[in-house]
Length: 196
Ligand SMILES: [Zn+2]
Image (cartoon, rainbow, N blue to C red; front, top):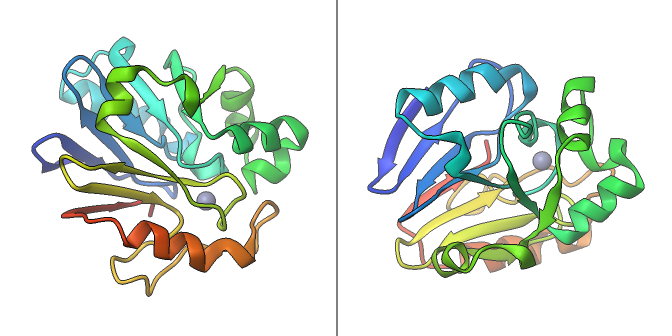
C-alpha cells in the first residue's frame, strides 16, 4: 500500500513482514529509503508503478543492511549504504543481514552498493545522513532539514523514544544505542518515518 504523508513523501507498507519504505520526490530524482523484505518485492514495484515512478530515476538509500530492508535492490542502479554496513557485509554476509533468505542475500550480492560519500550533490543538499550505530554497527538515520522529515530506520520507532529497535543482533553495538537515539530525536522534525 502506498500513501502520501507529506508534500514530497510517500509511505509504502506491505502484506508480509519487512521494513516500511519511503519514497521522496526531489527535483530530478526520487529517493527510496529501504526496500523491505524480498517477499514484498512485487508489491513494492507495483506501488511505484501505480504513481508512475520511473525506476531509472530512483536512488536507493539504505538505513542498514538487515534482511528485512534489502529485499528489492536489483531493479535499481544507484544504491547507497554506510561504509561500515558495506564492510560488515563483505566480511560476514549472514551477520550483516541478521537472518535472511537466499533471495535477500542474492539481492545484496548482485548489487553494487556505494558509500554515502559518493552521493550526488543534489541529493546531499536535500537529505542528511546521520550516523547512528547501535541497532547495527553501521546504522544511519536520514533527515531532510528543509522539510523537517526524519527517517530513523530501526534506531527508534516512536517519537518519544519509548519504542526502540533491537540491539541483540550479530552486528549490534548495545553501548551506542542510547547515544544514537538521543542524537536522532534531538533533530527538529514534523514528520516521523520509522523503519517499522
Ligand atoms: Zn534492522
